[in-house]
Image (spheres, rainbow, N blue to C red):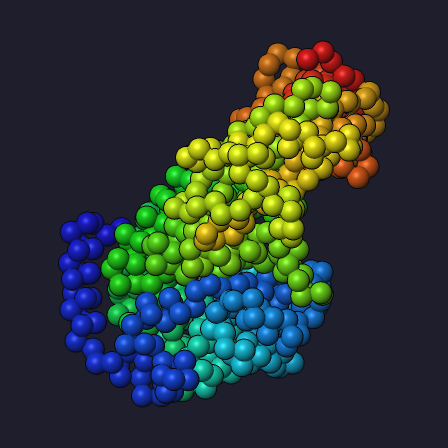
Length: 579
């Protein structure tokens, strides 16, 4: 059932009046600790609680793994040192996703393995001891068994209730800095994207039951902050409206809404030619969080962005080019914070290395850390290509200063050798121009690839690094192989692959996702700069008809190469064609 605009307004006004009448003690209850201990909501405002959680981090692919233990998806066992390091990195909250499915016994009790519960409690306690706010949930249970709510309610609903009854009992005396999230990315029956109204009914029933179980379990659970998701944790308007309706109905000042965001899909996975952080990708961010703010935050319901990132990271963090990736995260975190929404980075081990406890991409972290307090300057690109054998020219690059001022330009990341304004570069407005003589010196080695890393520093925010790359036109070679193992020998000559197009002889799009000629990076194809080849992956050939397919490889330097493959059953041959 959808709210009409008038009905929503009436309910909202009534809710505001109700909340305004509540005393400070009633918001969190008499069981709350001293405010100085950090466990009581400041000035009785749940929004203050959520704001204090900024920023947050996800312990992904660990307790949510569906194998025998927390290491089954490749991450090491969680240590107290890891949790302490997350706090030292500046994070204020941690989300601990948990899949309970394989840890639960048979009905009707559905008893959770005590050893597993103890282990979860141990890590929760480490997190609280580190001063972090903590969120725990039912995670992959959503699509393992909870999604069957429609056709198998008699089993799913009691099992869901049993899980939360046991979790609530275990943690009922823990600090209020621990919060419960009812379920991760809930979906039902027909799956992702369905607008079936019964799905909203199922989710409302789960959220309502969860709320009742926790509130009636006693201890600090009587007023513990509780986190409720939209359907699929998606920020579509109807999904936000339905969650708003549930929260108003529950009439509880300690409820928090949650959504997830992985970006404008074509950019997020690098498909359809969306290789750069352009206006559609930016607009998707502003539209998404404008909706969340207008529907929930502005009406007194705080929102947590419980997960965010880029979907291409599931394959490789290099699926999206480094500078474009950094611009996405800089703008996203800025805009989310402008809307007073707390964000929690999804990290399944690809960002913070859980073995050496260091960031796999320090530039990424430095930009993220700076964004918590200010904006960073970026540039239209972080790549400066110089073609071997051609006369070097001055190179101009537009900066997105975001209110900052350039304060220094250096030859390397360590800022040891400073470039001189006027001699090595000029700055006119937001246009940075690197002088030809400087670029010539930087590429004097004649070696293909990265010849220098120039670092621009600003009065605020993170540095921006430019790669100065000497390149020549890449060269491809003929090849033979099979649909499950085919690679094109490639001399990249310092260049980097941006994307690939695939069309049949008649001009129609070939391969998976044939609504576009541009294929998905890392899914249909991937470059290997170590083995000097471009791999066409099995996913690509699974949806390619027998016959000729014309490929077009686009490189970041602007070079474009044509190549032709012929598929005959499982056999594939390839040859270079004229440009």
